[in-house]
Image 1 (cartoon, rainbow, N blue to C red):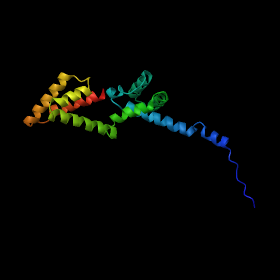
Image 2 (image 1 turned 30 degrees about the horizontal axis):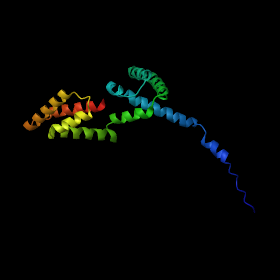
Image 3 (image 1 turned 120 degrees about the vertical axis):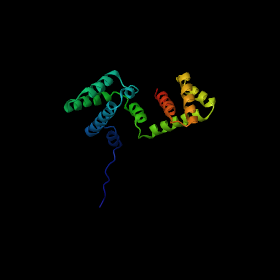
Length: 176
């Protein structure tokens, strides 16, 4: 008996790779964008300002937060998902990771800020000059005052109130 091998048509194989995404795949992507929109809507307004969103999407997110009825919220979320199709979702996800305390990016940033604070409090003015060079937008006088107060507080053995203020200021600078 002779075995007949099916003909392999390279053109037909090429066409299969060029097919548009299936309807199911498009629905999954739309759901992912809606969920991303829901995460954005849950952010504080100051965090949302840091995201690369266009004005129409910002107003849709603001409106979503004002809606109380479940059906209206669902429809608004679908509209947000539609607007998200034109937005740069990868850039938005990258910024969201910085806000999410469970991500490695957030933890790394947190540790860097702790290291800066410790260097500012334990080293001489060279650490302060290096920080200012790395963050030219910092208010130098305010930063020096925070460092001075935190050092004094540490020497006197008081609770680290000014140390926390210094950390908050460093975090604020890193977010801008």
